[in-house]
Image (cartoon, rainbow, N blue to C red; front, side, top):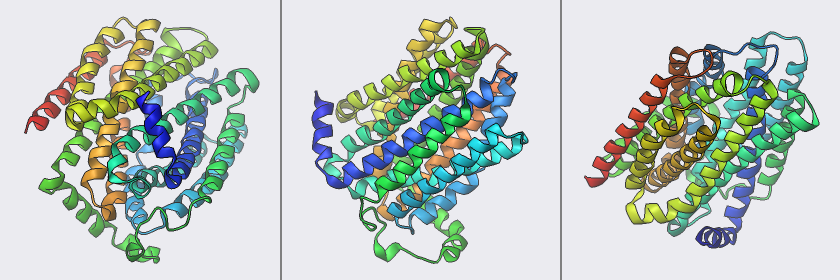
Length: 420
């Protein structure tokens, strides 16, 4: 199989292999932690969850990163990225342990959300750093393949972590706090794995490192303006289009995820444990779609070009999402989870490749942090829209149709851009 051969080639590169280990452990821990939060907020028997409650939780957890994200980009272009992985994962291990304590203690909800907010805030640095560091361990020839396999492997690790969290929650320990502690352990392993890489391996170059944090933060606005100017230059217009398209696809994914949560909680089954297991199955099938995207995308993007491949992915979603979603039945929804996983991850691989190949190394940290902020704002916006459109049981024809229209618009726009 071509994907196995490509992975074998990349794994011969020691730097890539070690960076991949950090990604797998870090994102696996993310999957565990996020599922623990979801089950605590949505599937606790004593909680009567509503779309508005889910949207509020997402806003509390994600919107503040619109402020953190730009600072993350500026600092990633100054701090040693290896040190970001080391200290970032150590800090997340500590903060996740605090979250577990708060889950079992009688504390106000806002204190729990502040703790979760801090964990995910550090996550902005780690994920943006992983993408910015990839070109430092892979040559230009293999960058498309690396973008296909590395982020997809991370997504699969997050999915596997989520699956492990479901198993622990349903089979071993009926405690969300125990699941969070498992995530803290994986964060600690990610920190230890980063020690296998040299401090200067992942960049940025020594000439770009400015050790005085206060000076770096004071120049944030100026540096961000320079980053946006870099992105909007004619030679990098493709990166701007790809980011816009991927942001809209993230919006669609967020709206459908809120709908799926409500369907699993109320419409598809009346038992909370069954609903939790069904959600886990849907996420696992979506993970299979991510893997399929990793197999297909290198060939498809090579034949069509990354922009046209994004158009194909959006077009497939536009056609099949309403066909499979409107029955609001279990089997079609699981099939839709696979299709949307394939389309979303295929587009993300293409977007990552376009951005990395178009943006200079000195700006990659900033651009990927802006990328991350766009993702968060789109996701929270989608949750807010879903909260307005979804009935209590999650069945909304209008939402399914609206998402299909957005996918169709993306397909048309990316096709036109690719032709130009």
